[in-house]
Length: 110
Image 1 (cartoon, rainbow, N blue to C red):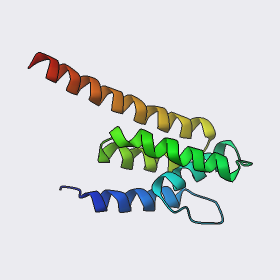
Image 2 (image 1 turned 135 degrees about the horizontal axis):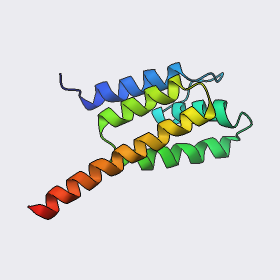
Image 3 (image 1 turned 120 degrees about the vertical axis):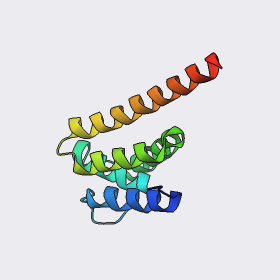
Image 4 (image 1 turned 180 degrees about the horizontal axis):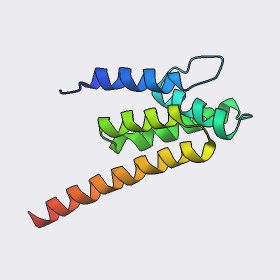
């Protein structure tokens, strides 16, 4: 089964929103992810901090494949503590780095 970009985006929005306990629904997957992180780690996060988080997540997810984005959104949505949600984000970064290193090595040896 091949996932289209629209399907992936819809899945990320749904999964991330399910884990969000805020009173308003974030306007983007990165917004939902940041709202969930804020609810677990910093309940007093300001609007500026959430906006900065959204920018950081959006720029950081540019190099991630669709499967990694969905997996990370699901992990954060299901996290029960700040440490667990932070682990989800670290796992995404490590998976991205592993993919980059594999691709780099493949290109280097061609």
